[in-house]
Length: 466
Image: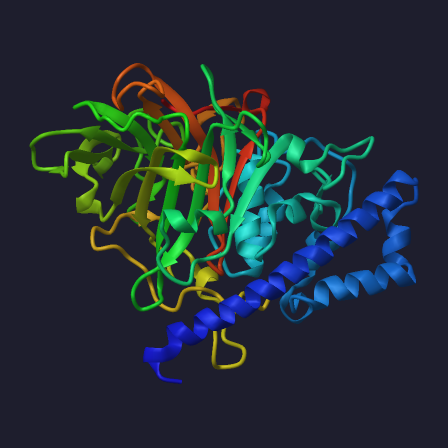
């Protein structure tokens, strides 16, 4: 196979694999419901898994994604484990970190990140194992790696002992795009929906009456078919006035990295990240078509913030006013395209193994990986696949363990807008519109997630910085 046609062939393999993964997740949900039925009827899960119907269902589940060919004993235990019920996507990750460590080891990640929240652990496992987040949280994907038998976090359908997953956290999953995307493609993507008001945005299931902000994320390719960009849409039906004042009207947090460390905000990581600010303008070095986009972060010296133009970092922003799947009225839709940074050194799982000598695959699932060579932006700075922000390793804490006491952390993707809906952009006070975690799978699937009640998480003070 010649190098020139490899991306096209790989894209076809990825599309076939996505179809396989969809079938796999449907089987997962079937098994999940079966296990819930058994639990509700007070039969031990071990009985049904050990029975003839349980063995058949599990063979179908595992065989459907080639996991049986690639998974080690640790992942098999994690995949099929069931344990005592636990809380949902709560704060401290201490109890579930061993499950992530096991998955990291199975896919060749030697330095496994330590995440501040369980939500991030779930997304990190989802990305490394090509699994839907609710599958990770459920009984057949429970955190049951000894010595921490955490058990299922939630169920697709609530039981007396466990909540339904969408009561504690909302997810949005999008496979990679085959080509560049535009506003007209939003109907084919899945968004995280939020209700907004005076306080933090609250995630809600799509179709919920009163949802007023929507966040889309999808990995997109360059002209050669290589996945190089994370494309974000902030769909904000509240803002219908298209006038723009000469002041900052949008603040977007971004989990940027230079490959050696994350780019942090004024309070350091994981409490604050780099912030993209967009304003109206009439002149200046970063003023383009009446808009200026700048990013604030500690790019040069850790702990000392500076401002760089978004363009110098390869970040592209577009402000549009148009209808969307969420509102027939013309309203604000902000597009942000951020370069990805994916390397063999930092992200070995994303380049897979080559058992057939033809195409690299994920070591756990056998699904094709999306990357064939390092993706490094011209500036050297981009978004990594990780479910950032992770806790930061130091000389005294080389593993990057999260603090044992309560500590502040932030969502990697926060958005806040000023405009008061009917007023011009840049007028009035800022209103928080998006608060989301995100990871990118080894097949370039994006997994976005937001807990329903972050204020009650234990062990962390989770909030957007603006």
